[in-house]
Image (cartoon, rainbow, N blue to C red; front, side, top):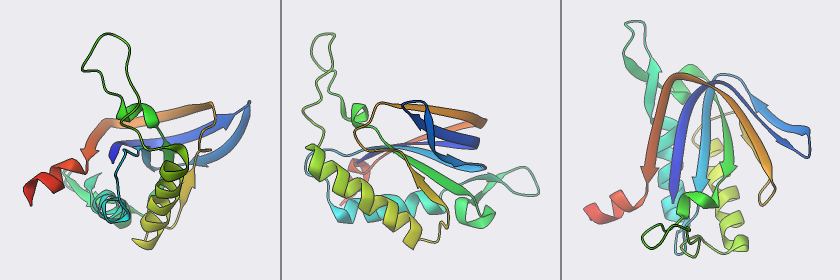
Length: 153
């Protein structure tokens, strides 16, 4: 799984001109599900994101997590994160999980994030043509890939 985490002051998703979800302070998480990804990886990623300390403490240091600040998360499925750009100029999306598998892991990830204690988890609409708007805070953007934990074993 791949995730791009952006610390935001606010973010929202619209589909066909209608706002379907919105958060204030927290994370916008763009989530890509790869072929072969598992619930174990999704659970680990949710835990890492919930505990990621990228909010400032009273001394101005990034030392607080989403849980510490009571922030929200807006999770948007993003199969394009799985693009293979190793050949030519047009990306291949074959590394991404099939839609039914990806949707199931996406929803599982969101539930795991809630299970970690993130009380406000909003979602996009899987497979829809979404417009994602955000006010980045910092800006702070972190890229995560569950492969890094697999390679350490």
